[in-house]
Length: 291
Image (cartoon, rainbow, N blue to C red):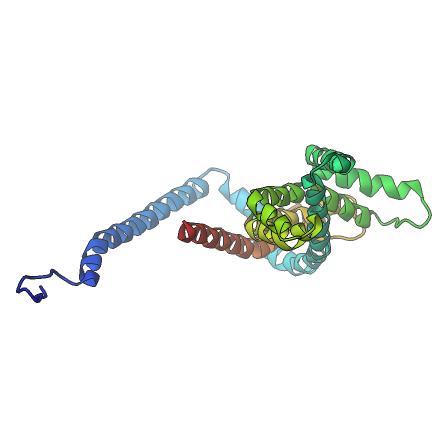
């Protein structure tokens, strides 16, 4: 207790009181973490026991978890996975730019922009309504057979175009949600300062919208990285990770190479997932701090 000028006690320091108040919460949090770890280990052990004690586990182990098959096939699968990464790196910036343009067109106001809004809306609804695999299949096999002079004839190229068209529709809606989340007062203030409609979008609305939708965009990019395997449907002469794993599987009648291809995608997607969760948590903390 700290004495005051009038001889009374002022009570413990603020830091001491805060520590005593937070101590039970810390103990409760540590106890919760311990319980979560124990329960997770118990569930994992139960699943492992259930699987390994099944009657046909030896056959499954031989067909899906054969170390010799994995060792022989994984280097070639990993080499082919470089093509998946290349397709992803090419498609991603195109999707970002094209989807942003679609979102802007859908956000334009006024009757003069109605034709542009209508075309953008039809595009987004069409490609969101059709499975991406069908788009890749139709473009990959359909366009090269037309024989139009000047157009590429590689099926892999048109498969990537189908992937870009499909994902642009989804990403455009993410952008549009970000644009509409910007308060109208921001636009009104910018116009009052003399900025044109385009300058307002360029310098006020779009920067705020993009910052707000970065975590959802990361989720779309995770899905895009995985769906590069869809191009293998039309790019038979350019084997990527999944196609290469199928070649080994069909040659050895063993499914272990398929798990090797899955491991290649996990090497990329798990770090991106952790990074996306970190971005979402940071965004949540920033919103809480601004309240």
